[in-house]
Image 1 (cartoon, rainbow, N blue to C red):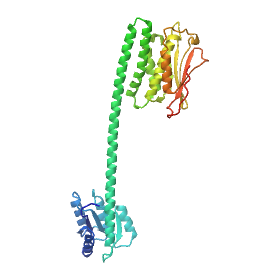
Image 2 (cartoon, one colour):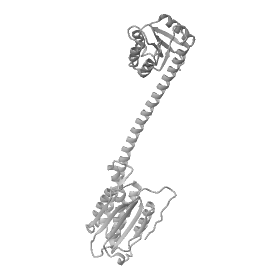
Image 3 (tube, rainbow, N blue to C red):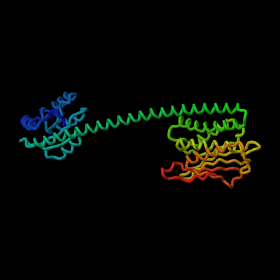
Image 4 (cartoon, rainbow, N blue to C red):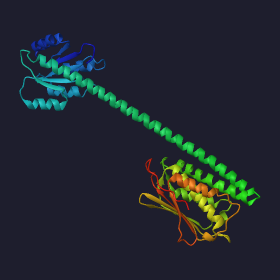
Length: 367
């Protein structure tokens, strides 16, 4: 309850009973104002509305002019109206039900001798506590809504910043890939050209993820079929793109997190470039990239119809590509196998769509 003396407006046409209420409630710590009619009571409430001068109303039912129920409806229509205790001499319970439905905080039956005054005091205290609790609840709800609005605004700002970061990172990596491409084009030694081309593909794989995130509605996932399409298009434009005219991709619209998408892209880049170099010694041939789901697992395969195990070892090879594939497979917690039944070379990776919880690991079988 408020620290100041609470004010009760008693609306009743019985002046003698009003004096009893005044004396009884004043002794109990209230300031009492009397209104002899509903109209007069409404004037008091409207006049005190801005200053909050009336804390609780006791409203009689039977009065000339506006009766109690009519007055109650008009009070409830006033913004910030004080709580109302409905008072009547009638024993008709339907009046109580109607008053409570209309918004009264409490209801009690009065008598002409004033014996109801202690009950009115209890009801007024209860109505004030209820009003304070309601006010506190409304303030808390308003603060919750304000906090949600602030959080939504911060989240929207964060998303814009993340998109801008991904945009700038993607552009920077693309510039690096372009510089590597130019350097590879001007390189005189084949091993230098190949190394730069491979590096360009690895950078492009990471850059494509950031470009996907910049244009995606969801900053937490990458759609793999779109990503692989763009990544392989970059490979077609590479220094050895004329040998990849038959490069095909068949992938489902599967979403995974950006870190794992980078690992998938780098693996595809390494294995495709490996096929470009060694699968068809006499020219170009088909290279297929396939991605499909098998329940909770994803199956990625890179295949060609080339010489397979008959490929001659390149003495200039450093084995870097194999080490990169093994490292990225470990990041994906993937198994890596070669298909012995395939006429050319087919490398298959199987990994979970969603990473397993920490503590659970899968074996990595490198070929």
